[in-house]
Image 1 (cartoon, rainbow, N blue to C red):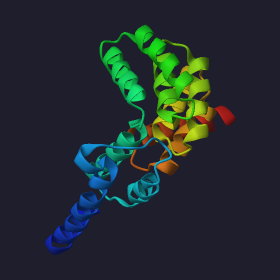
Image 2 (image 1 turned 90 degrees about the vertical axis):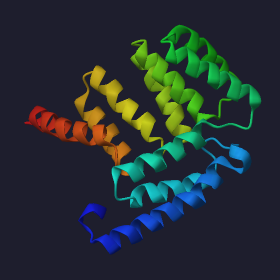
Image 3 (image 1 turned 45 degrees about the horizontal axis):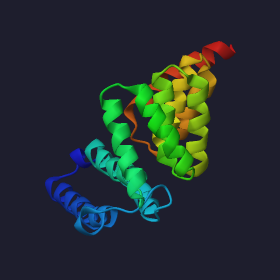
Image 4 (image 1 turned 135 degrees about the horizontal axis):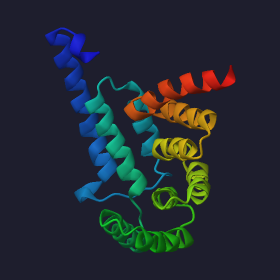
Length: 199
């Protein structure tokens, strides 16, 4: 861990980290802050490698945010407009409005993973767990590394009282992103429960 290193090593590691971010930020956001993207963006491969390598939670959050930014972006102005309206509706807890907009998103862009993921989230918030699970599976078919969708799948299975399936989902999420604090806590809790259930 960086905190355990001597001062020279710590500063050297932080310098290396700052250099990596300096390279990745323009790649992710492109010139003048624009982005092109979704889950097919080839820059995600490098970001996921870095996500495995970072040593602090702050570094992990930075890389996670870069990944989310790439997933969310689209070359389509229409899609960007609709996803902005989804964010507004969800911020106002108007989940029915968000759902209607997301129905349009997945209809016009069925290969855009974040549309399915956001609709899965709305379905979950509405208590429609089977619909949410269906959209999570669509998300993962397009982006198997989607740690947000995998964590969401764990939540769905917990609501459905399927501890073994929830444990599997959280373990899959941690394989992709070992820095998910809540997922790690759930894995610890669920392993005890599943072990008890199997006795």
